[in-house]
Length: 404
Image (tube, rainbow, N blue to C red; front, side):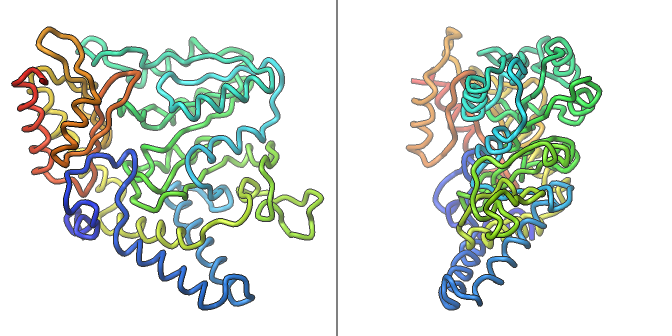
């Protein structure tokens, strides 16, 4: 199956031009049918009968192994979660912090993760430090490319201290689409005397680019199934390093945390399941497993990334040629996130929400973001050249009237 074949299975794309995969991907019809089929099966067996549990165990095991293959790591290192935030927060709270430890947080991280780290620092008397990588509120110029690999590593080198105990970075920055050199960062932290933990937010990378080399190197690699994987909302995962599993303790504790329900005194799983809690919606597992299989049918990880980048570059190049609409990055995007900032003829920024709302009135959907201020369009294997050209033509029309 090619991208067009997958697109035909996404009813949400039938009546709109959709560039919001980084927020939520449309659910394919076969994935919805898989959810409903599992739901019916469980109800036919009885939702709490002996016959039902093998179904739950089979669906859970199948998805755990499927996600682990995408991460390039063994299934015992994977915990199933509701979303990226839970995948980041639950392991963080289970680590052995000491007063005075320093948290080093990239300046392009999602607000939810930043807020969780700030609260962690407050409660455990930890120090807080920002890793300056992308601080700017205007698109980049040719002489100031944001955070290429060496710049990231140089900034990391300057920021690391003897007290650094955690580094937080996204694989793909959610606002600008910059790719972080996670493998090189992991190498540097492994050489640090204190061996700081490495937390990677994979919200925008999982499903849009190959993640296995980087995911396998992180101590915490959290991701979701509802964005680029086009799975159902409410289901994600986190890959955990063996050393983290050895050093950490469960945080939220429920029956799934325990090796046996008869061991409520502390017989916790030694693998990733120690960060799973209690009852989850089993049919969602069937839906995400189906969505992953559908994406695989389009091509390998590398082949899908090539398709995504081809579409992203078409949009990026079109934006570069459009007066008053500068793309954020100097080089073509590493994956499917294309951010840009429209400006009036006098150089002042255009109100982004107004532009997004006007596009929405024409059934063209993208997202406006602040800090840095930009519009973000996401291209996937299902995005067509005609959709990209429609967006560019509409932006050109807006620019011709000075965005008024």
